[in-house]
Structures are given as structure tokens and as C-alpha cells.
Length: 453
Image (cartoon, rainbow, N blue to C red; front, side, top):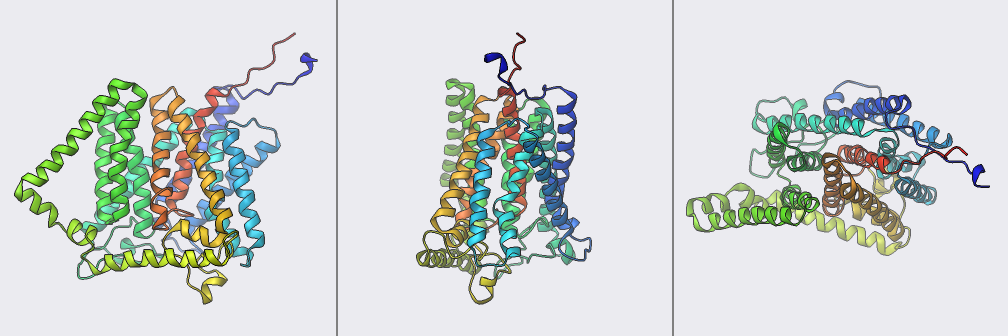
């Protein structure tokens, strides 16, 4: 009987089939990374309907989905079954909410795409990228991120002379502050919040590389981190600034965790010592303390001295209360999938939640959709954590660490207060990075063919 058992074998790591499929994946995912990062520039090209960047992004996503489905129907082995089953279950639950929602199907399908379907990009990357291909795609993503960051810095410094079409995308408004000439940079990625969320992802990738590479690559990563950090400041996003600081403290500690107790102690001492020196310097050096405490960012932004900042904070609480009111009316399945989307039938007569993605999910799908969403992303985080801990190559492990830290920061914190994640550039970029990280799992899942009898 044992001789009749059929064994499935993954394509050999360096086989022609694997190399060809990975090369195709590198091309498609690179096009996707470029299209979402430069969506504002691509959007300047006139089209009969919608944005050209959106057409490219959705078109590539559909191609990825078709290839994945074709491979699964052809019984292609699963490189990460946990992720495949989790994604399939999440999409199935989301489809259930589509069916019971009172919104028109076009609205529901767009909501489904924004909330779930873009995740197929990571599934495609996991199934078809080799480790070499994953490294190439990640390189494209992080460098287009730097390019957009440089442009955003230019937007801030040359805001008075740049034409309107270089200051904001055609589908977004400019953000500023009452009583100032500040124009918050957006990199033409979207509004300022979307741009800041994207920068946080790029910052995570480059900062982790500072500790997982060596030689000239480390210095390049450090320089890129400084550029992206400067771009973050030009967004004036309180949430992203705080999350960036936390990320930059935690990331080196987690990298050190893989290297042993001595590395942890040394890294902790350096970071702790640096924070103490900075705090003491601000407290004891009068000119420095005055300069920091009287800076616009501290006095007007974080201390809410500006009327625009106060209005924004009040709006966040209004959105939370609105979500809780909707939830109270239908706590189990919500008021309808897609109702909180722009252009929905609900939005014609009712107010929609524009700040706080999690609160919008709670209103649309109640406890069931919220728990399903949290469960799915928790599984993604666990899979990323597995790669970070087990990957033999430190750079590959760092890729998973950057994606995991970003997921915790953006999904676990920022999405309670803003809606700059789902269906937008940072969402697609995250799935590209997560797919590149999860692709290394295949090296631990090879199934050998049956021995000849």
C-alpha cells in the first residue's frame, strides 16, 4: 500500500519553471509597486473614467489573482497553507457580508476590493517568488518609496512656487493649519494621511536594513532612513511621528533578539543611554529646552495649540461616537458592507466615518466582521513572526520584521484614528512587502519525492 501513495513535490528551487514564474512575479509586482507609489503622477494622464494608476493597480491585481487560481486548480503545492486558508476564509466571510448588505453591488465590490481582495497580491508573491525575486521586489518598493519621500520634502520647501497639480493629487485636497502657510506634503500618493502611512512602511523597511546589512549597504540604509524620516516630518502627522519613534526604538531590539543575550544587552544599553542623554540635554540645557518646547510641532501640533489640530481631534471623537451609535443598532452584522464608503447609498442621507478604519468596519459589519478582520491580520502577523524567527538569512528575516512592525503600528494603532490604510497605497504596498517576506517559507517546506522501490 505504501508504494501506491502519491507524493507532491515542489518545483526545485533553481528549476527553470521556478525561475520563470519568479521572473514574471518580479515584473508584475514591480509594476504594482511603481503604480501605487507614483499614482499621483500616473493619474495626470487623462482617462475616460477613473485614474490610470487605479486601472493599472487593479489590472495587475486581477492578473495575480488569475494566476493564483489557475495554479490552485492545477494542484500547485501551497507554500504557506496557513496564509492561503486564512485569506480564503476572510474573503468568504467578506462575501457573506456583501450578500446581506443593502448597498448596490458596485459599491459592495469596491469595498470588498479595498478591505480584502488586494491581499491576493501577497498570496501571489508567496506562491511564485523565489528568495532572490522577493529581494528584488522589495528593493523596487523601498527605492520608489525614497523617491516619493524626496518629492514630498520638495513639496514642503517649495510649496509657494509649485503649481497646484504638483501640490496635490487630482482626487485629494490640500491639508494645512489655521493661521499658517504650512502645506502638509502628500507626495501625490493621496491625502497627507495616506502618504504618511506609506512613509511609515518605507521607514520600517530601511531602518530594519540598518541592522540587518553591513558595509556600504548599511550606510545607504541609514541615509535613506534619514530622508524618509524628514519626509515624515513634512507630513505633520502626529500619529505617524509617534509610531515612527516607537518603531525605531523597538526594531533594533528585536533584531538583537535573534543574535543573543549579549546583543540584546548592548543594544538596550545604547538605546536607553541615548534616550537618557537626549532627555537630560533637553531638561538641563536652557537654549535647547526652549527651542524644543517652543517649536511649532510641540507647541501647536502635539499640545493642540492650533485650531485646526483641535478640530481634527474633536472630529476623531465624533467618528468614534458615530460608529458606536451604528454598532448599537446592529451589533452582530452591522448596518451594511460598504455603507461607509464614499458614493454609497447610505452616504446620500447619512454621515459616513471618514476617520478611523476600525470604527468604520465595526459600523459596517458589526462584531462578526470586526473579529474576522482582527483574526485574519493576527494570523498574518504570526506568519511574519515565524519567518522573522526562522529565516536563515538575516535580510530575509528583516523583511518580515519590517512588515510585522508596520502591521502592528498601522493596523494595530493608527487605524483606530485614521483611514489611510484600507484600499490605498500603503495597503497594497504592505501586501507586496508581506508577500516578499512570506515567500521565504518555501525553503522550509520542500517535500521530497517518494523513494523508488
